[in-house]
Length: 207
Ligand SMILES: C[S@@+](CC[C@H](N)C(=O)[O-])C[C@H]1O[C@@H](n2cnc3c(N)ncnc32)[C@H](O)[C@@H]1O
Image (cartoon, rainbow, N blue to C red; front, side):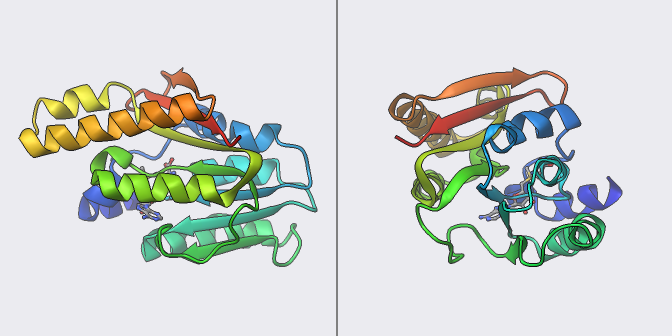
């Protein structure tokens, strides 16, 4: 927790919170992977210290594959040492790969994932970046695959009160994009109160 706080304070824009996800939020985010049938390919984006990774690893069968993409090298080192290295003693070699990179830059196989689980703080990003990343995550899914991501409940309303005009316009544009994607991808939403702050998990289906 102290390590998460220290990295979060130095990288507020890309981390976007001061607390890792609660076990309830982590389970809810990982539900798409838990419900997906094996053999499955899963992509996790922005694991931080790994609360969602732990839930995904619990449901990883011997023929499943997990790719993880994390921007911060400090979070990568921590995740590798505390979660992935101990897990690798039980899993198959090459089953889990950690990429220390930005999701918009890393090379991954398009159209190949059954589910993408994303922990990025979209409300902190410029609309162009949100659009680039969202389109990429959907392109990485196979047809019928599922993207799940989250945002903090009421965050846009609260942030709007402290932002200037362009900042508020940016949040409105993100909300508009999310509404469009929700309609085009049979979206569903689920509020998780047991998290600091309460969060909403959103799921999109690739047609
Ligand atoms: C809100 S934290 C989520 C942490 C974790 N998933 C959890 O639930 O506690 C966002 C994470 O996304 C990572 N991140 C931010 N921008 C990224 C990008 N473009 N590509 C990959 N990871 C990114 C941050 O370094 C951070 O670890």
